[in-house]
Length: 482
Image (cartoon, rainbow, N blue to C red; front, side, top):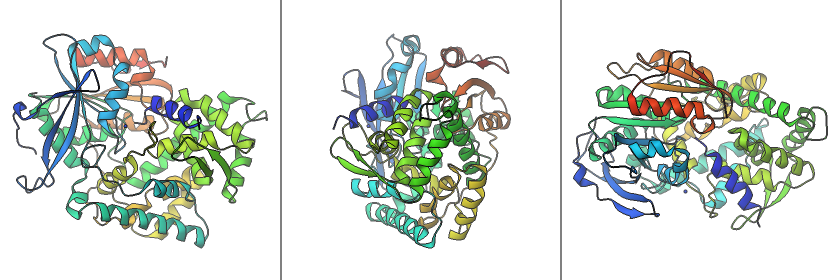
């Protein structure tokens, strides 16, 4: 899940010139960190086929319950894949009501290869900038050759900075095994879990592997595991396309026309033809250039939450006037730029995980055909969505995973939360996952934006009630956005 608070902070700051075997809870040594939190590390094997071999230290963080004798620990995952859970809890703890924080200890972790857990970094900061600047929808042989070169350079950087064994280990299945070790190390007989966005995929895989180890699970912004990469990309592109036009309706005549769709199309037509505009950002980036790739990333970043639509309005208006600073700020937040000017490794870790989780098209010609197909159904984002996974074509380890409906036989009731206007994980995915899981209940939020817990007090009440009492909302319950 893209943290909307992080995008807001970055956009403002840049313009001013973060099948396992049981392990005893005594193995975790907690120490105070960052004021109210406690931190620890947990060793997990690189390979679960050789559990006594090389180990990886996972970074953990917890916010202890404010009352004695809490109900349980809630393990949180922000999604991504590649989202750092430690940073997430440090930034988002206040979004959880005090009543919940009184009854539960909140726990999160950086998955293997993410954040502080032996991070995989495939690109230098300059490489991240260059990667973001690539044409997201190449058409000519020269454009395609440049994108292929960029994808190969990215993969080469990964191979230079990590062993094949480590790259082979960065699957969601291994993250689920790690999470079961974490459950045991926390002294929890059963896991209480809240996953957002791709964190719902992690939760689903965990439920398939360890159904008897679950106390409660909440999936907010659900991923439909039955979809292959091409079908998921097609539906996600359509989701962002719809969200962009919802933004146009909200924006009104904000770009100097009765319909902002016309000036937007004119602006991006110039970007597609190679037009660039300057941007002046906070060091270490400083002066930079907004290309078509950077501009489109900026728009995508702002569409994750309606709260960032005012920033997108300002960004597009400024871009019309020749200043790309807001668009660049948003774009680089999507590439992992933090408020201290450094880059997280969310892009590197995200590809390392997604390339193992879902097979990519096997030829460059299939990418071309898919881009042509999706550009018809989603003209603004379809081609970019198709080309997004190109590094997986050159990934050194072939994915052994395959799309399939979730089953999780023996798992307790799971609460699936979906939003009708979610662009990144379309509402149809939540509906499908709730049908697939044998004892799941679908809870719906109406309105735009990715994930629901932090944008609807009604959703929070139902989720918190379920976590505390294990009582589900009635089937068909619908909540408004705040």
